[in-house]
Length: 396
Image (cartoon, rainbow, N blue to C red; front, side):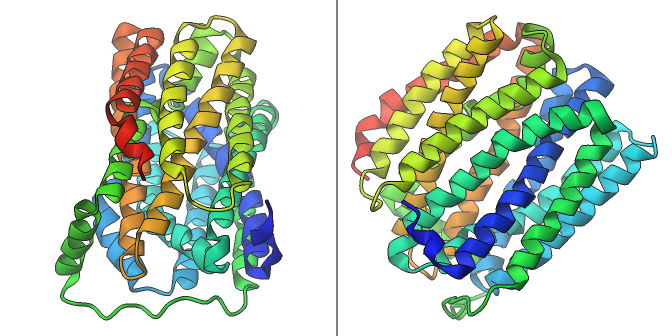
């Protein structure tokens, strides 16, 4: 279950990431609360998500090419340092009382550019920190770290906002990057395959990556499933401040608890995936995850009781990680070394880059139809995916 932790480099990455991601989730929670406090408009939550994640979509093709031809460890060191600078600027502006919504938009845009390169580089680096037969376990354990931090981070954010305001969360996030930078610097002899010789210019290489991904039916099916989940499933997280404040009347502490329950469900799901001994059956994991998310989203849409909503958020986290970690594993196993960086950039583009469009649409619909009907519509889309492509996905 924890075989990947027997390797020193992965242990360093695992614990450094855990500290850093707690800070990141604190910042995400505090930023959503700050924007909603300043505007009281669900549409603005969707817009901030769109601006912050859109660069991953726009730059994803080039980022994949760059990752395939870069030293992955060095690239991750640089992106993590730039993310630390972004958090520090956000903290200083908020502490000084100068923060405005356009500042949040601008800094979110900058972080989105950094993440366009950071996400595929980190995904590929994880697979290089362990032998190939431990790659599945490393991916699952990394998902555990991500989601354990989602439990701790939002809960701490609720306390920190009450104690030191949103600026305190942003400052803690900036400091948390020190842990991952120290861990990356302490790594030894990371085994990376030599960068492939370019077969043409960047655009030709990008076209080659697209042709490779979309000519391969299993890869194409996984990317399709991710697209629907990114547009119709994940935007529920953008709407959580609306659920906390307007539906459940629980305030910022309720937002932190809802986020933590989602992270708890996702962490348990990731640990269950870590027990698997290989990648066989990930197609079935993706199908069951999309169907389960549909049911959990429907329950969240109509719940008016706080702890029942927490239960549904835990289910959403559980099923979402089955889809996301299953898709990550499938894409890494299905891709060859030459194209893995570009394929994982497509994963980032869809998982991170497309979800802002869904968040923007969800925020706009919630402003007009209400958050309940919007979330119910998302559930219908997820159910349609599971019903329409279930048999073909199970064959992966």
